[in-house]
Amino acid sequence: MRFILVIIFWVTVNSFVFSQLRSKGIIEPKHSLTIELGLPNSISNKAFKEIMQGLVHVSPYYQYAFKNGLALGVGGRYSYFAINEFRVPSKVFGGMHSYGGFIKIGHEKFYSTLFAIDAGLKLGFCQNMFYSDLLRSKERDHVFKPNIYLEPNVGLILAASEVDTYRLSVGYSFLGSSFRPFDIGYDSNETIGYSEKNLSSMSTFLTIGFGYTHHFNGKTSIGFDE
Image (cartoon, rainbow, N blue to C red; front, side):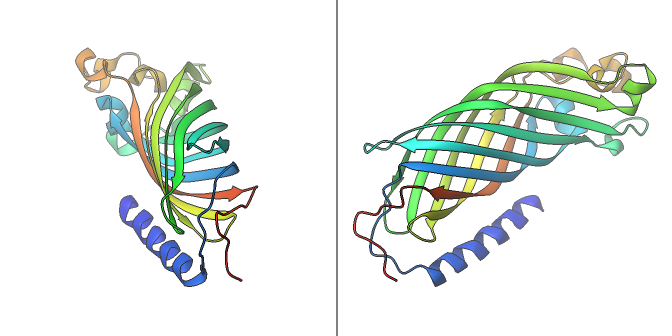
């Protein structure tokens, strides 16, 4: 359902862009500011995949692209996962806030007047903060798990003007540690049916969403018609 909503949004943006844009030039990216918004879906670590339900992932960042297409960026990120109360023995309310910063190394290039690809790797740190009513009942307000953050990502870009572009973005995020039921207040992993083998893999999630980029230089190789 989430994936269908994203596709519907992208088709709508795509139709709007093609109806509005009358271009003869190709954008030459340089200084730009991007914000990406998507729906995170937990992938690995059995407990994380079944218990934690992704609601939002947002990532604003600045990027500088060289003439050869090499792009360097810096930015921040925030994700929120809620506890799926129907996947635990008794209702537990809470979730996980994950936030941090990163640097990005990638390649950004326009292949026509409309279309570009921005592929890269975000590398930085994240603070994963768990909270729940079960933790509070045990006088533990939060569980903090700081980790290295890694995200390969790609953006399929459409130009709307000589300074504005929209993108369909896909990223695969590694949170740097494994999720355990203990993080949300359970005394042991086996309490809700997970063995150590189920929990050994790193927590990861896939995000499919959309983004907007403003190019501050606003230059094109030929120019845009009025």
